[in-house]
Picture (cartoon, rainbow, N blue to C red):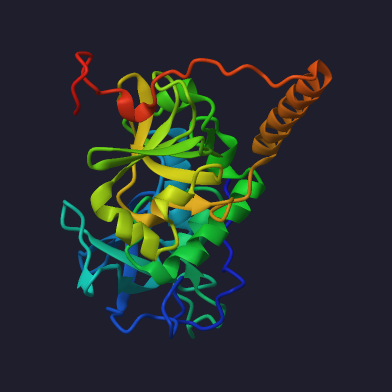
Length: 327
């Protein structure tokens, strides 16, 4: 049996949500009572409204991890009053999904459901609770920028402790140097971590290459049209070579190698800013560093530099015509 979700220590007032300068954003829409929890990020209210929790990715509902997320959310919210604030796109427009569900930030009353008088315990911010217990991951799209630091911090704690999804090889972060493992997630959401080998441009696309063998290596692709948006968030693509970075989004396969297209700044996190490496991640990093150290020692003992090897085509060349033309 799963333990009850506990209120986040950072929550201090009955109406506090994961973000917002005054606790609840000025666009708060009140709340309601949760009568059912269809899946790990959906609430059904007594007045008939259906609410999708903003900023989260959970496992499919028909999987063990998906059922665990639904159970955890039900423990935290079912039968309880919730305070809601809609997620907003640029310009303040409320966000809805393709099925018309309201996308919102939510906090459920603390203590026993329906306590009379109202329970004085702090409310449970549902997004933070699910992330902190490892039942969800931060999504590739977080419309409210003010929410991102709190979401990442909650995810970081669960990942460092190897909780929930982060202990499952199907959902845990994948090292960029393991493209075959990344391809197993093709068509689904994934978190990939590694060091960028090079940054190149071809046509209207910027390529963050995580390896030199384009037919196999992972690469993140960035449409040139959003380069300024990324730069405004402190992410200048041309300066990322050699940096360790975290990428999240839907995995695609192009030309043989796995790709994630970057269309929003929150899909990238520099130097572990989005997470703390798990125990398994740290072991892999230590192994890589030891191999590199041995290679440097071998070169020094040989007394001559390592000969340059022919370089295979880069990721951005994968679609280049064979007849010498350009894309």
